[in-house]
Length: 113
Length: 115
Image 1 (spheres, one colour):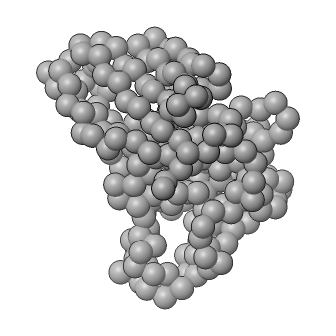
Image 2 (cartoon, one colour):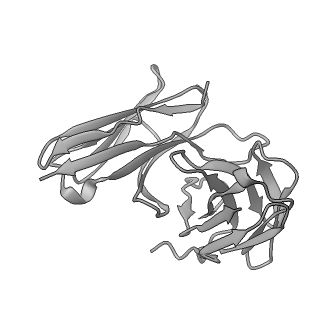
């Protein structure tokens, strides 16, 4: 079982809609979580960090549910420019992998006019 | 922009050859991590360097090796290239130490094609 799992989508939503992605992680001792946005053939860009129960930045809200071991990302009032792949990452406790980011495969979002 | 740079941007090699990829970390960051991203997959952790030493390693064979220099820049070397090594290689810069956030910032990547 992969350590971080995401629904690959694609999620096709109209402009202005609200969309939510979930990401589950297997290591209950994971300490930090991140959402990255990746445009086609570009590098991942850090969107949000989640250390406690959640985080909010404008139209974006991330929530952490430690009991159920998932992180969610909510995007309100979707814009055409939000179309991208959204990657979830978890940092497990320090091990022989240092402070590696364990990524999911990503969820594809397409916002249409 | 993250301030993390990588070179070259694209590279084509043949099976069996060796390749060196380079990364300059963001100013003030002391840690560099390398990831391999195959098409349609999330980035996979290769290894991490902190203060010029390997600080952790993912599930990659020994023909993947690296270095970190005193200025915190880093190299990734891959020997005996295989077709499956074709991927986007990403370098990520971060600041490790007590109380830090473990946020990692990626460079633009090097796209390696092995034929």
